[in-house]
Image 1 (cartoon, rainbow, N blue to C red):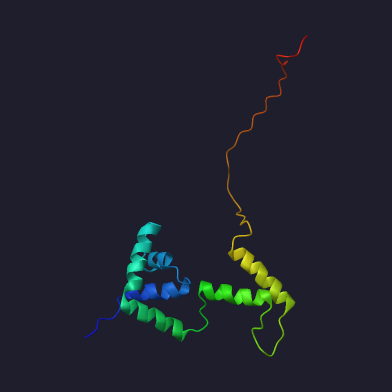
Image 2: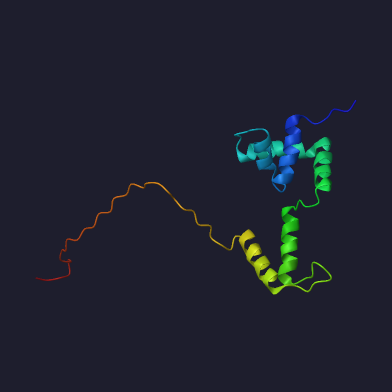
Length: 139
């Protein structure tokens, strides 16, 4: 009799699909692990080599065609950006192309992400306003 996936393996498969194939984060989420990224990546890699895990992931992807991998998303945005028709019955939309270019730029890190800090920062600024003669100046 073939063994089924454990609850955590099954959770890993769902997390992997939900995290767009990020095995490291999927392992941390499904195993409630505080492991370092390198350790989590190693365990995720081991799980992804498990034939039963592979079958479950493929089954989840097949059952939900709306799940886009990162590659699929970039490919779709690229097609929109260059004006390739997505639907044969509609011409490319200029606004959609511009938005796709914007999203691709964000994905590729062209924008700086700003973070807002709320809290207190203890700083002290001291100004030295005293004037002294320079060595090369004469009285």
